[in-house]
Amino acid sequence: MAGEPQADCLFCKIVAGDVPATIVHETATTVAFRDINPQAPTHVLVIPRAHYPDAATLAAAEPAVAADVLSAAAEVAAQEKADSTGYRIVFNTGAGAGQTVFHAHAHVLGGRGLNWPPG
Image (cartoon, rainbow, N blue to C red; front, top):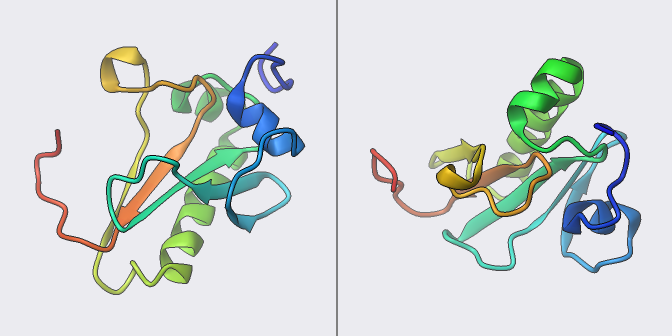
């Protein structure tokens, strides 16, 4: 069921504290932690504490929490000093877009030039 923790979800396990992560920011509705395979000097994942399989599902079910994820991403960018040089917030939705963990999450990328278009 959407919103409920999933036993087989890596990010739900991080939220529960069952899997270690380098947490850099937390709110009542979000957790932010460093990506284990960073693609930029700053690469932090911001996730909702509640389980939703992707950004579209999260936005439809809990628009306020989707906004919290974006607000937390901006706070992380400022904390990491990426806000002064520019940063990117990316939501991959679906396997074809590169989503590998099916728990909604935003990638906060910065600390180097980020060419457009990506990928």
